[in-house]
Image (cartoon, rainbow, N blue to C red; front, side, top):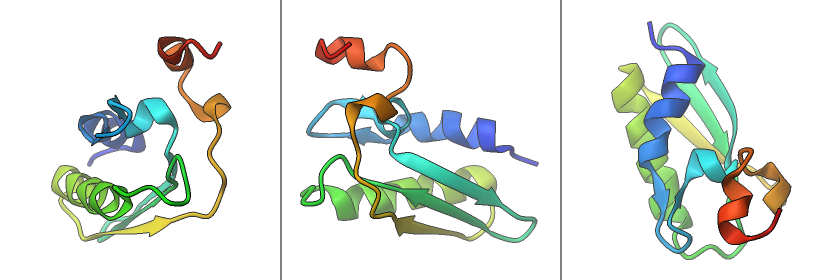
Length: 97
């Protein structure tokens, strides 16, 4: 059975086309719930008006579902993103920290 850790690794293939970094590096995946027969992913966007939001949400859902082998739903959270949510070291690529 796939784990949250293996799913997060699989989700590294989902890249924000505007920023050029994956959704895990950016800290956009906020919560993952994996059950025997389904899964649910909660993610946020870097900006409330992200033009790629529909594409990123669907690509994330599809990648998770393919990796886990169970129906997967996705939810866009309303939490405001900030650079401190990025993985350790990822913000240095932007020259932020």
